[in-house]
Length: 106
Image (cartoon, rainbow, N blue to C red; front, top):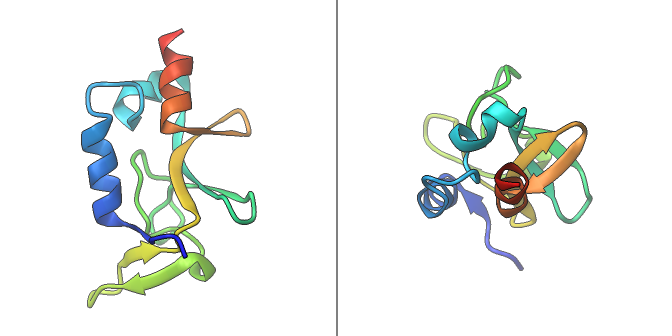
């Protein structure tokens, strides 16, 4: 079974892609919005707060309950199922961090 996606995973990815177009701050000007892909089902989800408000960075709190694996003591989502990949949405398509960075760099 794949490891779960956690808030620490997102922080590590942000450090890995820091200074590139693979993070929200680096590609927002090209209309990319942070989102997630469930590789198991092909479903995509925009990054949202737990109240459904769109978020400008990747957070796990707004993902549907069927994806949630664990919550912390405060009720915030701390991990989701391992088939979830962070990336970006634009014009109805999902882009991995690498793909978004490549598109912006063109």
